[in-house]
Length: 307
Image 1: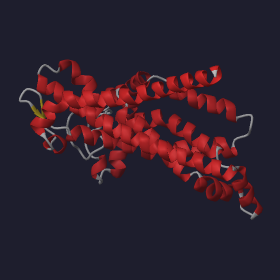
Image 2: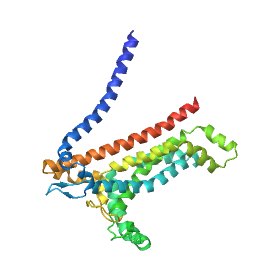
Image 3: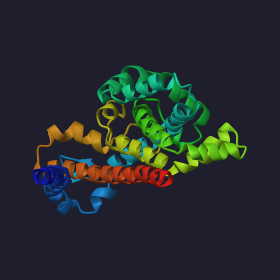
Image 4: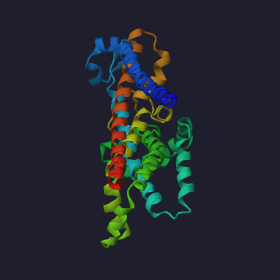
């Protein structure tokens, strides 16, 4: 009887802890919606389709921030996903056993570096390198494309994308490595028994089996990139405009909140910034939830195969 009572108390405490986390997220969303309601009521759908951001005249549109967030994050994914999955394949399938633990530890260590450190490195190292070498080279060779036209500022959308890529590669690598290690050895053994080479085994048996988990790892990296603040704020240029060129400065939803929240002198101005935060919150939660479902699907499939 005492044992059953203790189990019920323990189960109740755990349910309370889990419910508290869910209620905290819902309370956060509700409070943000309540604070953002004046801007939602005033601007409506125009808030998402206009790029004018004039706090003095109280004209607010978040299109340039949404555009900057999406472009910088997608650019980071184009760089980080191949690098992260390639590093995960090396660690899980090809690296010698003695090399795997220290390299995996270094990957996790890089993921723990504060974002402001990446931002400082971006300002003092990456931005001058981009301004002096990379952007002039891209402009001279690919200048016929609108993406690589304009003066080489050093800071801008391309620099922000590279910083984000460097920051999310460790996350993608760590999650992808766990996904590949979760693939049953029977998949590898079956492919090798049929005469497949090592690369064919990795490509056909391992990567195909863990495809949904690898997509989830990429989406987790995307969620990290969407919400990154300090490093992007320090290198993106912070100019609210929609420009096709990757050399041009831009703005993201996170960076505009970090830069202007303390300067919000009117209620409508503050409400507009909170609405930007609400948009970022909803997008990030949706992307991370989808990524978790994809990663869990691989774990569930592995469990079924083992049973």
